[in-house]
Length: 108
Image (cartoon, one colour):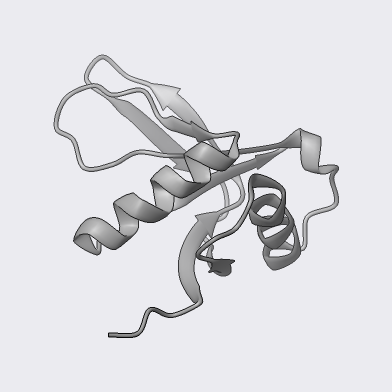
């Protein structure tokens, strides 16, 4: 069995997360989802660099906020990817069930 070195994840680069009475919702401003190539053993900084390059973002890596929400019917806070451990957790979640939650990316 071979494991691909890269995986593709999707990112929505323009929007904001809104809290409703039942759940968190992402309100997209442009409805564009971009594929992002991510190395399976990426560090947090490599992950952010890939996101910035794929989205053609004009901001510093420290200004990028990346989050996602796994399947849930109850109110759940989004998971913020802000460390090597969180990148690994996201990649393991994707590998475990094939579900690829869209990354929500905010710059600035």
